[in-house]
Image (cartoon, rainbow, N blue to C red; front, side, top):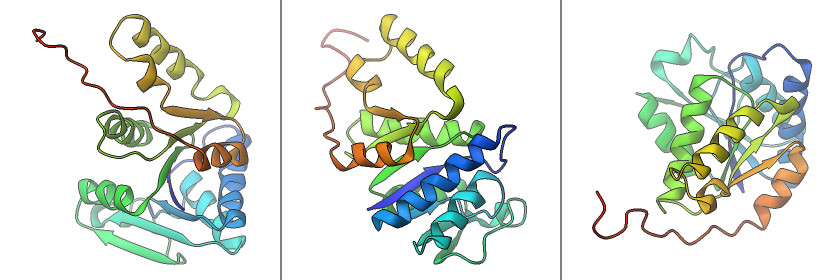
Length: 192
């Protein structure tokens, strides 16, 4: 399976974030899975790609022309695709991938995660979406999402679509057995 990884172009303040990116890259290669990601050689992006390649795996990067120099494109990948826009980048990442993992990252990571999760909720794809919650990085976000369920803005089955683990191997194990929920119409007849 090709697994798309969303993550930071920074390494963050805790060494455990880089360790998790490295462990995920190694786990992908050991399972024969391929990495699809944003194409940078810096931050957690570079760490997951380098670990995948070092373990004998394949790494496919997709980076927009405008970010090629800012994010410092990784020239040692199995494949590096230079695209015209962020929209093209995300579309290609989605098309090439059979599952999606979010490591710690910033606003771009959140945006990519929520877009692909929304597409799953709407039934545009039936691929697993997971979060590696390293050092509780996503704990407050997940608590907010639980609050959104309680307040009636997110259905429990849609919240439950996100597979959350702290260990990359366990996350990938769960991907192998993922069964997406049946998507039902959110708005009832007569509602606006």
